[in-house]
Image (cartoon, rainbow over all chains, first blue to last red; front, side, top):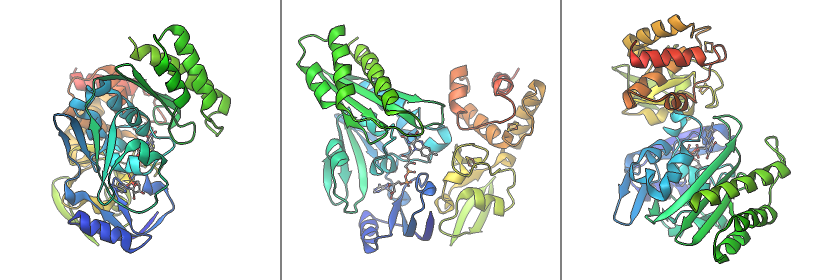
Length: 264
Length: 149
Ligand SMILES: Cc1cc2nc3c(=O)[nH]c(=O)nc-3n(C[C@H](O)[C@H](O)[C@H](O)COP(=O)(O)OP(=O)(O)OC[C@H]3O[C@@H](n4cnc5c(N)ncnc54)[C@H](O)[C@@H]3O)c2cc1C
Ligand code: FES
Ligand code: FES
C-alpha cells in the first residue's frame, strides 16, 4: 500500500467531504488490513480524533463506535453475556491480542471479508449499522447490497435479545484464517444459521433455517436433516486451505454440534 | 510530516512519510530491539506497547502514534531482566530474536491479568512465534515468572 497524504479530521462532515473529493481517498481505521493490500491512497483519512472508539450500553442495545478495536469489543463485559458471549468468543479466535488491539470493528465490517470471523457471529444477532449519510442499514442488507457509494460507518448497534448462540471457527493454527466458520442463534423458537469462509462471504442457510424453524420439535433427526439441507443449499469452494467437499462436510458437522448446543 | 510521541518516557518528534509503519520508523530511529521478521503481522517479533497495550508495530501506521506513548523492551528493562533470568533457567532463550517481543507481551499480560491460567497464557501469546524453543520451556519460564518462584 502507498499513502501519499494523511489527514486527521475534526468532524465527520470533513471526513465525508474529503472521502468523496477524490476516488483514491480512503478512511484508515486500524490500517492493519490495508497494509497488506497494494492500494494507492491519495489521502488517508484518520477518524481517531472523533471519539468513535466508545462502546455504550443502553437499555436495549450495545452501540459500538466504528473505531473500537476488536479487543475492546471482545473484553466488553456486557457483550460477554449477550447471546452467551458468542461475539467475544469469535473475536478471541482472530490472530493474537496485538492485532486485535489495532484492527477495528468498522474496518472488519466495511471490508466484507470472505474469511471474516466478525461477520459470521454478528449476522446471527440483531445488528444495525449507522452510516454518516446513508443512515441506518441492517447488517443483513449491507452484506448483500451492491451500493458502492463511499460513506463512513459511524457505529454498530447490537440489539439486546434473550437468545443463545454458537460459533465455531475451524482453523489449522491459532494465527490462521478460517477453513470454514459457523454461527447459529436461537431466539425463542427461531433459529438462524450462517456459514462463512466457504471460502466466500458469509451466507445464511435459508432452506435449512426454514426447515428447522418449521419443525414442531428439534429432535436429533431434525438436526441431522437441517445440516444435510444446509450442506446441499450452500455453495462451497476449493482453495489452498481446503477442498469444496471438505468444507461442506466440516460445515455440516459444526451445524449439527451448534444446533445441539443452542437447544440445550 | 511530523509526529510527536513519547517513547520509553522520552518526548520525541519523528519525521515520517504518511504511509510509514511504526516498525520501520522505530528501527530508523535506532530502536533496534524492535525486530523485523515477517513484516506482515504474523510473527510478533516487532511487538511494542502502544499506550500500554501490545501491538505489532508492523501493522500500525506511524501517523497514528501522534500524542501517544510507545514502549519498547528498553522501557521495561527491570521486568525484562527478571523474565530473562527465568528464561535462562529453563533454556527458553535460544537465538533470542523473538525475546524482546515476547517479553513485552508477557509484561502486558501481567498488567492485564496477574494470575492467568495456562490456557490464557497460551492464548495471549498466540501472536508471538518462536522458531527455536518449541514453546514448552518458554511456557514454563513465563509461568514461573508470573508466579515469581
Ligand atoms: C495478518 C492479519 C490476519 C487477520 N486474520 C483474520 C482472521 O483470521 N479473521 C478475521 O475475521 N479477520 C482477520 N483479519 C482482519 C481483521 O480482523 C480486520 O478485519 C482488518 O484488519 C480490518 O480492520 P482495520 O481496522 O485494520 O481496517 P483498515 O485496514 O483500516 O480498513 C479496512 C477497510 O475498511 C475501510 N474502513 C475502515 N473503517 C471505516 C469506516 N468507519 N467507515 C468507512 N470505511 C471504513 C477502509 O477504507 C478500508 O477499505 C486479519 C488481519 C490481519 C492484518
Ligand atoms: S514483523 Fe511484525 S509481526 Fe512479524
Ligand atoms: S529463541 Fe529463536 S526465535 Fe525464539
